[in-house]
Structures are given as C-alpha cells and as structure tokens.
Amino acid sequence: MGKENVIQVKSYQFALDVIKLTKTIQKDFVSTVLLKQLLRSGTSVGANVEEAIGGFTKKDFTYKMSISHKEARESNYWLRLLKDSESLSTELANPLINQSEELIKILFVIIRNSRANGA
Image 1 (cartoon, rainbow, N blue to C red):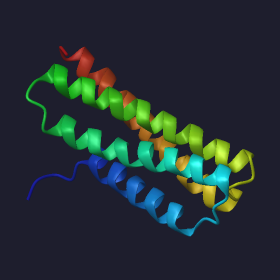
Image 2 (cartoon, one colour; image 1 turned 45 degrees about the horizontal axis):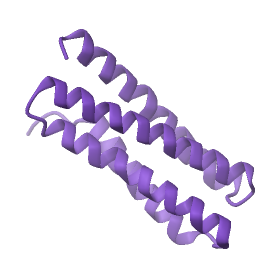
Image 3 (tube, rainbow, N blue to C red; image 1 turned 180 degrees about the vertical axis):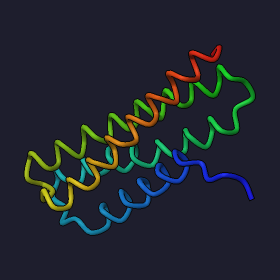
C-alpha cells in the first residue's frame, strides 16, 4: 500500500466537513447565498487536488494545485464572512477556518516546491 497523501486526505475531509456544515445551518436569504459559495469553493479544493495528482505534466500539476490554493483561500473568506456576519457561530466556524488555513499553508508549500523543481 502506498504512502498516504496528506493534502488529498485533508482536502477531502475539509469538503466533507463543509457539506455537513451546510446541511445543519439555519438558512435565511443571506446565509443561503454565502453557504452556496462556501459549498462550491470548499468542495473544489479537493477536486482540484485530485486533478493535480492525475495531471500529465509538472506544469499541469502546479496549475491545478494553484487553483486548489485559490479555492482554499476563497473558502476561508466565506467562512470568516459567515462568522463575522453572525450567520455562523464561532464554535462552528473556527474549526473550519483552521482547516482552511492549514490547507492554504500546505498547498503553498506544494506549489513553491513544485515550481522550484521545474514547473
């Protein structure tokens, strides 16, 4: 069995946690709009990681990881906005904000290393 791919596992778990969150939140007009944005970006992180892993070239890998990085940053934005607008409690928001920040850091390192190695 191969070594566990940390970014693959963490981005998948983040997507699951975002999905679970969006199912449990009381929705009004504003929170519905914001949660849809979060759901889109939060699930896109892992989807782009998967595409990067399946990429044919180093350049393709780096590009898809860069998209994942952008989607993780966007997810972090929506989570902070939901929390600060009081559409989402601090107790629910902070763990996901922490997850998104961890993903951002990991993806940044992956991209930096990939570019340093010729992509």
